[in-house]
Amino acid sequence: MPELLRAQRLFGNMRLRILAAMAVLLAGSAGVSLVLLRNVLVERLDVEIHTALTREVEEFRLLAGGTNPTTGSAFGGDLAAVFDLYFAREVPDEGETLLTFIDGRLYQAEADSEALTEEELSQPIDFWLSQTALREGSLNTAAGDVRYIVNPIDVGGSRGHFVAVNLPRSERAEIDDAVTTQALILAVTILIATAIGYGLAGRVLRPLRSLADTARLISDTDLSQRIPVRGQDEASRIAMAFNDMIGRLESSFGNQRRFLDEASHELRAPLTVIRGHLELLDLEDDEQERAETTKLITNEIDRMNRMVEDLLTLARAERPDFLDIGPLELSEWTHDVFRKTSVLCARDWQLVDVGQGRVVADGQRLTQAVTQLAANACQHTPPGTRVSLGSALSGQTVRVWLEDDGPGVAPEDRERIFERFARSSGGRSSGLGLSIVRAIAEAHGGSARVTDSSTGRGARFEIELPVEPRGG
Image 1 (spheres, helix red, strand yellow):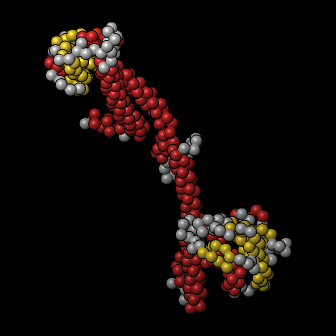
Image 2 (tube, helix red, strand yellow; image 1 turned 180 degrees about the vertical axis):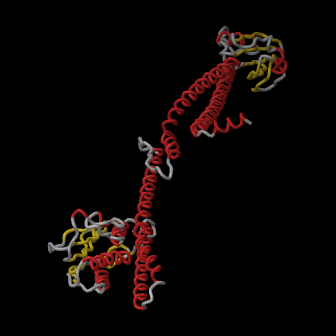
Image 3 (spheres, one colour; image 1 turned 60 degrees about the horizontal axis):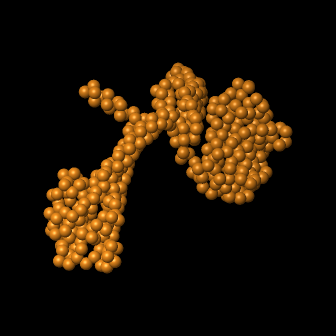
């Protein structure tokens, strides 16, 4: 069992699995190539032997059909003269034995130093002498397989046989030696490739090991760990994606903790007010006082409901389905928003500019954002203050703004007021309204900001969006 566990741990290593797969593939391909190489070489050798034996017979026949150089006339029935002339002109090739027979008796034989002698070929001689027509084939002898060709010849009542025999033992030994040498070279090559692959696999898998080590160090209270990234390969991209994911998780958890801290702080005040007045409600005998207390409690509950709704809106802003993107006629939408916001409070509402053109956006969410800006203006400006609304389409950018002649926003507070439950330098909380405005703008791929009013008094809140938002 311990050996099995050690084997499982060993082959559970990705680096070793990659190397094992590579080594198996290399060894398999090397084995197949060696088998094919040997088969091709043996086949070529067989072709060469066949060509050499056929050539010997053709030369013998050509010589036998010619004239005797001694007499100047045809050989006639003088087989001995034909054989003598043949051996005078021919030398056996490598591994070749040449045999001639007259009336069943060996007349003359010559053999290469690597070939078989007539004594070693005594067993198949009877078979060759029994042939009456040209025959080529192979036989198994004590010395190994031999290739042969027999050419019977009948001249002037004499019967002779010309036999050419080839023993490919030495050539096949050379082939086996070449294949063995190639196998050793391939084995060394595989070992070198495996060693190089081991180092390269370690380099390639280094980001994955760092990812695993970093993942073990990460906890729900510490998301600051990151994987060092070097290069642009697949493993490095995995590491970058992991770092991005951890970054988003760290940001999300940080926002969540801050959100819970801020929400608990803001909700504590209305809950305290409600509890205190509920305790006094049973002690109050005056009907008018009881009614005012009940109204106050109801107002606090409504305020908590609004706060919860705003919290849910901000939570949904981080979801991919927060926006319902579609085509939007900017002019029609601007007039519609102005009609809705101009009845929120008693202010001098003005529609100053109306953009023309079609954009891609979530009209309801944009209406929600502008309504929040209008409610913010109602809250922080006195009755009768001028509040103007406008929109414009310029190139690939859409701008919607709302400005007033109220007290304005201090420069040091202009970024802070878009944060959740942020407090201005005067100590007043901005609640969640402006946070929702920024969340809607950023969901469209845009931004929200506050600047000085065009008249020099008050504040100007702007929402800037691309004509084609991301995800649209």
